[in-house]
Image (cartoon, rainbow, N blue to C red):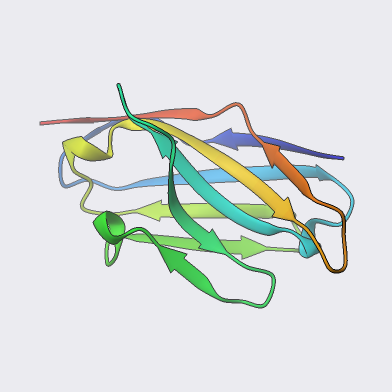
Length: 120
């Protein structure tokens, strides 16, 4: 079982920066692919950034070059550095931990989310 807690959201002006953090409790953090997702008003939840256990990262096209995901397995944390934010980045941001076969059974955990609001 993994429990995830996000922090760092808030109100930021367009063009500004914000750093989101996700702290995990429980065992096996380093065996999970960690991701940040977001759900904007009236939209479906979408992947923002992913940091896999093999070190590979992936980003949604709208945030490439502006957002950076990082993780610290020793501290069980994952961060999302957000730069040059835009009003369309306004959303609830969720931390996600996921792992599956062949080494593990499917597991998928979510945090409660943190609100990011970008003002014009």
